[in-house]
Length: 91
Image 1 (cartoon, rainbow, N blue to C red):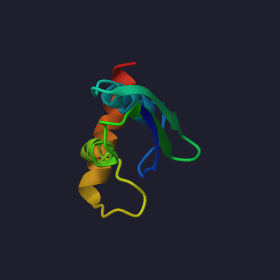
Image 2: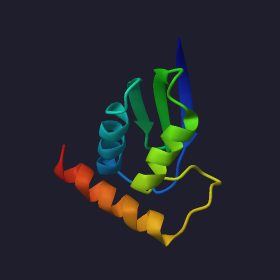
Image 3: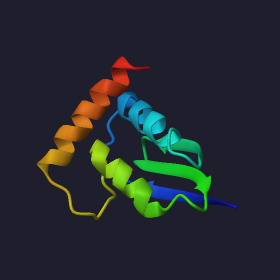
């Protein structure tokens, strides 16, 4: 059985961010598909039931893309800028 998780995030700025998020989440065991909508700042993840929303939120948070409404600080912005730059370099 699969679950579809839709998560609205902050700090999503460009294709570099999308590339980083897509690559990182796609590597998670049980994740089948990741799509990112830049205009909506939304990540959609199709994953097995064993992949929890909390795990996905934690992964996004570590990259600097916390969920809208979650606690965040300047460290998240710095992490997202780094993730963005990395995504641009690793297309």
